[in-house]
Image (tube, rainbow, N blue to C red; front, side, top):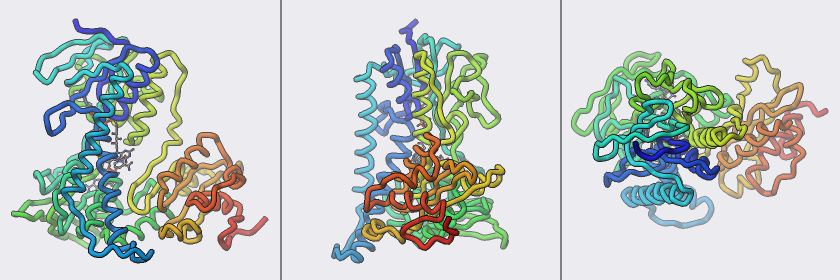
Length: 479
Ligand code: FAD
Ligand code: NAD
């Protein structure tokens, strides 16, 4: 029998590595098992987020946004940049460098915090044992008083669009194109589709998005979703809602896609096709038979509000359990679980988890939409403020979008904040704090915001809840 640990974490994504570091910081003897291999065949830490998710996608989003600014927007502000072009290979090399630095950084943090990194594939074989199959194929069993499963998720594949190397790809493949496709098809106008569709659209691809649902971004407040759709359309994203893809075929260097919509059957031809129709939990093989860890009907590991599985002392966190598939949600669950294992009282507020879509402008939200609140029978009052009326937005050449606050009509408590605008992903932290602290809209309205900042739009939206926005003609009756 190999070493015994207080905690063994399976998976070193933002759920697992954070849980492992926190557990070690709390004095627990901790190991973290990881199997992700980089292109050189070496185990790397960081999971989906660092290797093929949040970080590489943001590196490409930032680079492509700078390209658009230099090519189209600099002139507006008096900068003569001349002929601007993008070196896609260099952009990709920069992305790879960032990934390498960050994944190496996690391995460094493991060493600094005394987390034992175990390379290989972990499997829970009993409530106190993890079997690890190493890269050499040899299995070793480790004992642990507590086990945390943080195995993450993988892209969903659909029968009409089977992946074809380099042609029909998932999000990982779409982060690897070595040239800009002339015609890019995207199946699914969700978060990945909008982010990666934006990257390649900005670099010159003609992007067509085929989305099954009739509603665009249904999780976002309708006013914000509608404005986002309009802005992205203006940028060139051809978003076709209410479509059903029925088949695809690779013919030479082209992909032929068949789909139907309310008007009938259609065909479209692309140079590349990205399939991004959601992700599914990656739980296959991580739970040994007979251990008693229950999965739900969609393959997620069944957990309670504190991420306890159906087996005592075995926890599961992140994308492989219920809830939003977000890195920060996974990390917070990791911290909660490590704290619980160390004997502390810990819980999460699942109602105050922010979401951000890193398009330009960004879309960010937390809490209820106006429509969700009304459907739940809550009487609401709302306040909105357009960035077109913000001095800082004008100075930034970023006047598109608006901030909206949804508050309880009776108590004034902030129920939700939804924003589309430059830096919305930074501004939304104010909504998260408001929800976390149970603030009223008036609390935000009475807060002093720095001038000139984009955040002043949040302040004005809070003032607008009572019809008192300063830099806008209020439509509400003044009290
Ligand atoms: P993962 O990051 O998937 O990590 C799980 C780890 O477990 C992996 O390293 C895997 O190799 C390992 N593993 C699995 N099984 C075993 C086993 N049996 N033995 C050993 N190791 C195992 N979220 C955001 O919040 N913001 C973003 O901007 C964002 N952008 C994204 C962009 C893209 C293109 C994608 C695909 C995702 C993005 N996400 C984003 C989602 C985010 O990446 C995930 O929510 C997050 O990585 C989940 O963390 P996790 O630790 O649960 O799982
Ligand atoms: P998603 O759920 O955001 O979007 C998938 C979209 O595909 C949906 O709009 C869905 O209606 C559509 N769809 C499903 N089946 C379809 C079909 N057969 N034909 C056409 N459309 C279809 O999923 P995603 O974009 O794949 O992203 C997966 C997860 O990764 C997200 O849930 C998100 O949590 C996470 N993620 C987060 C970020 C971020 O935080 N910025 C970025 C990328 C990914």
